[in-house]
Length: 348
Image (cartoon, rainbow, N blue to C red; front, side):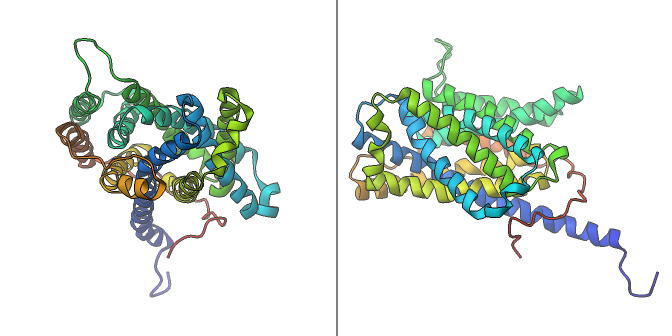
């Protein structure tokens, strides 16, 4: 070896921690955008109610979700342009699977959000942080560690407090139940994105297929649940509705999901599930002041949330469980020889 030459293997090892750190930081940005989505969706539902009072919850859900994915799909079609013909079958398959699982999660999350607070919804959504390591343990036929079992108990206790679980009636409210169900679909989405056989797929084509799948599903649901055909176009006449939809499309759809598809494969699914638990922290913080700002501008009644003992205790237990899991992080994923995705700029 010539003097002063650094072995390529050492160079790759030295880059790995930096790549991991960048992945974590970008996923935190995605969490910030998703945290913003909770008060934004509540405001969008209120704006929808101004235009079409008395709408069913399913039509409100479809009518508020479909537009953001339709707009996001159009944006990516324009961005990709003449590269559309290079989309591979594997990218389409992964994108459709992500779209199906994400659509299931968003369907129940958005409907459930109409029956519970933004902060409670944000925290309960994170239940997949426990389900993912449990699923991994089931597939490997190995019992979870004592730490994981302890964290599972803490999360279940936190969920019971947050959802105000009625142990006598043995039921939860509609909003809390649907949010927990959405967490199952989000877990499947994280696992699909973590498949090593799809590591060569490019972020933008996969995201486009994902958005198109969700746009098709939610548009179909909107048409099926609309009381009148004119109800599909009525919200587009509302300035507040357009503004909230635009913010959701730009930050909480295009921004967050492109970051997720681009950077999550750099870490394990278990670690990703833990990082995504930062989302309710952002959501809770923004729900303390954004609702009043939205209300003052749009002219509806959406009060700021308050810190309650349910949120503090339940959220604290869920957060404690995830902090404890961080002390025993999963091993890093095997390094990939796949070149960086040229369709997404890599920050310096």
